[in-house]
Structures are given as C-alpha cells and as structure tokens.
Amino acid sequence: MIRRAEPRDLRRLQDVERAAGTAFRGIGMAVVADDDPPSLGTLETYRARGRAWVASDDGAAGGVGDDVAVAYLLVDVVDGAAHVEQVSVDPAHAGRGWGRRLIDTAAGWAGEQGLAAVTLTTFAEVAWNAPYYARLGFTVVPDAELGPGLLAVRRHERELGLDAWPRVVMRRPVRGSARIGG
Image (tube, rainbow, N blue to C red; front, side, top):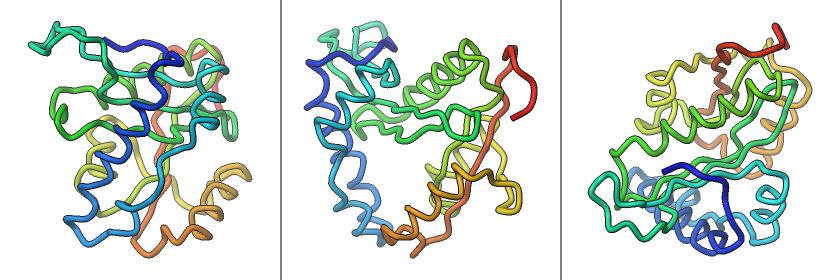
C-alpha cells in the first residue's frame, strides 16, 4: 500500500536508505553507498509538508502485513515540476513495483497541484537508475533546457562529488495536469 509518511516511519526510512545504498558498493560506487541518509529533521520537514510517501507491507502482496515502510519517496517543487528528491526501496522488497507505484503517486500529486511534469536527477549508467526511469516514461532533459532550479540541483550534486559518474536530469509529463508547459 502507498500512503503518506507518518512520524513513526521516519527512522525506518533512514534504514531503507542505508539498505538501498548497499547496491552501489557492488558496482564500485562506495561513496554513494556510504552517504548518510536524510536526517530525521529533513524527513520530518517533507512529511509535515505532505511531500513524503511510503510503500508499506500491508500483506496484500504476500507480505507479513505489518505496515512497515519498505520504500519511500520525497518530492520538492522545482522549476514548476514535481521533483523527486529521493526514492529508495529496501532491497529485500525490490522487484515488487514499489518504486513505480511511488513515482506514479508523485505524478498523481503533481497533477493535483497543477504541475506539468515530474523530474529527477539520476545516474545515467546504473541499471536501476536512468534505464529504469526510462521504462517508466522519463526522458533525458538536455542541459541547455534546464531551468534555474534544476541547474542549482545539479550544481549541488557536483559539489557533493556525485559527478564522479555520469548523471542526467530526466522528466516525465503528467497526464491530465491542469497546467500546460513549465
């Protein structure tokens, strides 16, 4: 089940982030694997603003039904689009469509807000990053087409050292949004 994050979820979201990061170690990206999860304060800010969702095990998909968060998504508004700040899935629950459902939830929220698109930044050559998002309908946005907000996001990522591996900005239009264009 996808639901809004609740205060009781926040520590678990940090655990999900740490677990999800371990996959990067296996492909030589230890810096990414060792990155700290969002702070409890950051997670609470997203939660309080209604911009944090979790996938929880409600038992419907053969799980144990304990309503524990197994994946999460945080969203900002950047350049007139819903920007996925983070989406992570606990590897023990990967392959069950949680990431896709969270992205679809963000797209639904974006449409309700009158936003025309969902954007994200991601690693271009990591199988569960850009190629995965392309399968979900995202396309790469050329650098020349980035607005000031996404340029600032990319600048911050460079400062963090994430450009040690190729990164891209991707965009997916929101169907049925109230606003057309940026």
